[in-house]
Image (cartoon, rainbow, N blue to C red; front, side, top):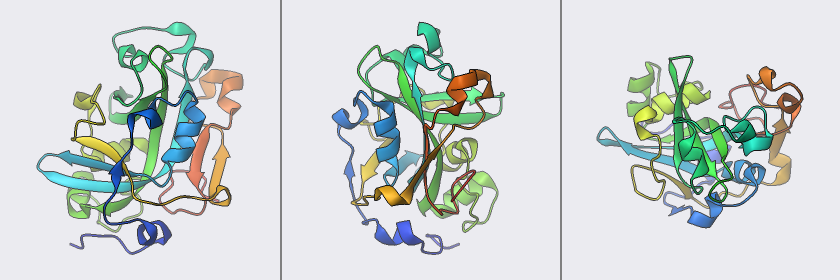
Length: 218
């Protein structure tokens, strides 16, 4: 199996090595800013004995108590949401429909309870392991397309809820890829119709034209 996918615009632009994102990136007070600037960053995992890495191409921002689509809406504080009230830079992983592990990043200062969902990524390193986990070819565009597929391919599960992204098993790197504004699209988040007016907020961000994005790609 090949170790890398067919080269794409993003894979050709990222450096072979990068620098982990600093704490103040995650504690930025605006979840929209974090969601936008996570595009082009490289999500890495060292789980189950292997290294995988992928370029983030799609995110969604969720903005605490004032956002009806957010789990912490109206200050909801449960065993599941407890991690959201901690300072940014922790993994928030939950099970959706009893099937899919969704990987979010807690953002903002302590008590704000914001998060960013990582919806899709372009495979970069460790494709054979991703393919084995997903039961797909290593060059399949759906390898990490969609938040459940992304977590499965990168080996992330609910067991990693609360993981500190500065501790080494799961982390995000800056590998020098800066996406210009014309390369980024925004629109409503997916699957949050229950949030009524908040469902229309343009808090989904994606890389224009990427075949790895989970929904609209233009």
